[in-house]
Length: 287
Image 1 (cartoon, rainbow, N blue to C red):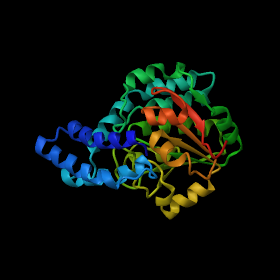
Image 2 (image 1 turned 90 degrees about the horizontal axis):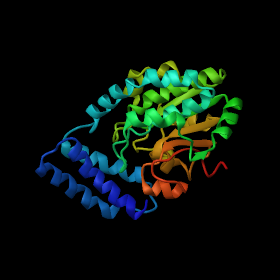
Image 3 (image 1 turned 120 degrees about the vertical axis):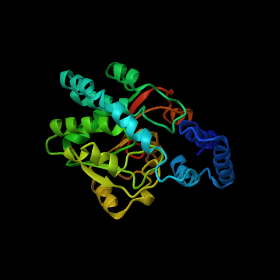
Image 4 (image 1 turned 30 degrees about the vertical axis):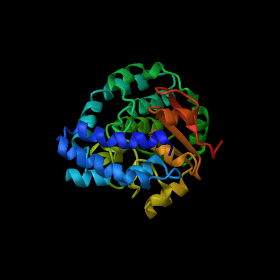
């Protein structure tokens, strides 16, 4: 957490209300509640850990168990329209591994918590010609050639359709690879859960794992036992998005790579890159 994260998380409360077109009185109640929580936020926490306390409080006031349910459905429907183009680009690519990673990064723009917002159609159109600002994909490729078990940690709904395409490609390129796909333990922001993963047919290309985690990022201390076994037995971990980067970069004990689009100044500074860049970077504990 940084001071910038404090203002960002508070502003997310307003963004929720604006996105859902909540009336002014209820919006004020939401902002009052989140404002009262700010003094409890600590700088030794990650932003996802704080968000895990904030969003349930917002949900209580809005009387829902899944704030962005409708928007997750819309994002998934919107993402489906791009799949034929993405699959064709991967199939015709001279480097299908690189193209598959790029496709998964394109989906990472679907993020209702990010300060910077990007257009999915624009990103899909240019992603295959965009170089990684940090490119550790060679080390990832080498690791997967040796690996038997890959854990892919999902991020947002809609984005998970691009993850499915990537994982299908990885299964073709690395036939002996057993892939696991981790999702959140309950709805939090617009993160993917078992419900969305199963509906997308991700079980066709990977084993879906309910992580038990209630943070918008894989918090190792909150994993359930089945998730812990999968994580600890993984030969490689591929974590999608900023929330997983914030949660795992300093804590992961497995060989871990992060695949994301940089959407905030704090993550940009951490990576030494700019907002808008795409990265495939190896975790700091694994370099």
